[in-house]
Structure formats: structure tokens, C-alpha cells
Image 1 (cartoon, rainbow, N blue to C red):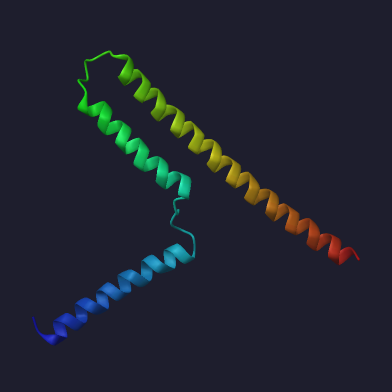
Image 2: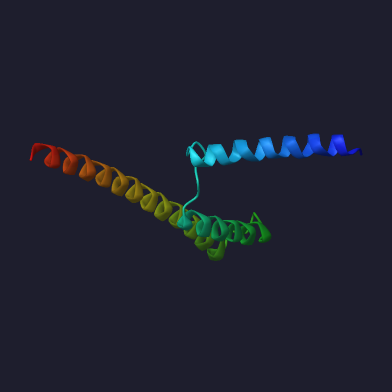
Length: 104
């Protein structure tokens, strides 16, 4: 590979990296919250345990593992919803504070 080819590859990689950085900065790419990262790991581990057992096995363990997966997903959705509501309330509070400051 010549230096010119290497330069073109580096240039293409930098362009791709710049595109990803722009998407993250402009918040067009959803970033995972800490609770989502932890939940993904736990959900993946639970699913592996479920898959490791016989799919035809109708044991209490599989029922419990499946129930745990459902509950973790439900709790994550509640946390996400509460974060969205908090953001909305903070935005509304800032708007009302600006209105009050302008009224004075």
C-alpha cells in the first residue's frame, strides 16, 4: 500500500468519525442511559441462562427467569418515562422563569 492510498484511507476514516461525532453532538443518535446499560447486560445474562436450559423444560426456574426479564424491562421503561417527564418539567420551569423575569 502506498502512502497516498494510506492517506486516502485515513481521510475516509476521519470523515466517518466526524459523521458519528456530529450525530452524537446533535443528539440524532439515542445514547443509552446508565440504567439501560446495566439492564442490557443483566437481560442478556438472563436470556443466556434461559437458553442454556432445555426449551421444553417447564420448570419454576425458567418461569422465574422470564418473570425477572419482564420486570427489568418494565422498570427500565418506568425510569425512562420519569427521566423524560423530568426533562419536560425542567424545560417548562425554565420557560416560566423567563416569563416571570420578563414580566418584572
